[in-house]
Image (tube, rainbow, N blue to C red; front, side):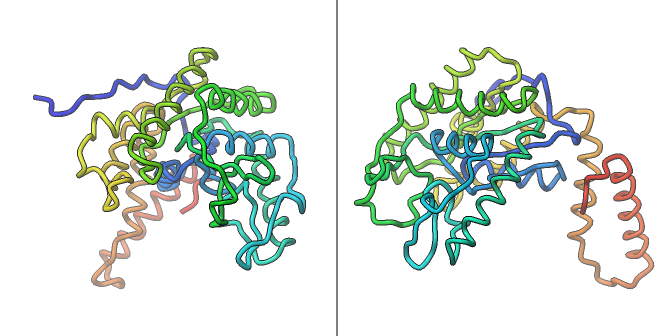
Length: 317
């Protein structure tokens, strides 16, 4: 007897391999999945400009990177003893204007190069709700705790989201026509917006993405149902963290397993298993580090690492 509703997920026609070069963009759930990719030693870059939730800000970031529109003095501001940009996460805020601009433009150049080389780009959209800077009428990626009176809050329409997603894909495709895309909606609940408002937000994202998939009809653009897995297969509060908003580690592991089974080529499963063995080996804490048994264990571990790196030299432990 089944006690859950399984979400059918088609096998990717162009699955991820160890030779793939991956960029993961979007919400905090993108970082959850990237941690798994990093654990298994894929060539993965996650959120160069930090976590970004809404499609318009993600499009703006991609536009900058693809067209090498570098940050200028007018793109940053001083608040609360730090320099910030409304286009990036606060993790990049700096102590001086020059420091911030140098960092952002170095990241921008790296991101540009990564887009040109990427084989797979995973975009996780988090929310349709956005804050618009009243002064210049621009949607921001992060408010940096600037007083709320300086912003207006609105929900993006399905049409606006669809245009932002299509623009994002087209921008990348112009420079990297062979890139594959995996698009998903974050299962994290944005309850600060309100319960009904969160559902509206997710529904706008899902509707827009499905419109894009239908209009593009491109086998190189896949939808992975992270949100649907959480809502239907894992519809129980035991699969949420203590805040009851973010997926628990068990839920993240389960969603990763579905991603692994459908988006990654089975040809590399043995190597992934070897990588996992090595990673677990590093966590091993011996009672007697100088014992012969432990030295043999370390020798076997190094031999396994050498075998992995012989086939995939880019893998580093």
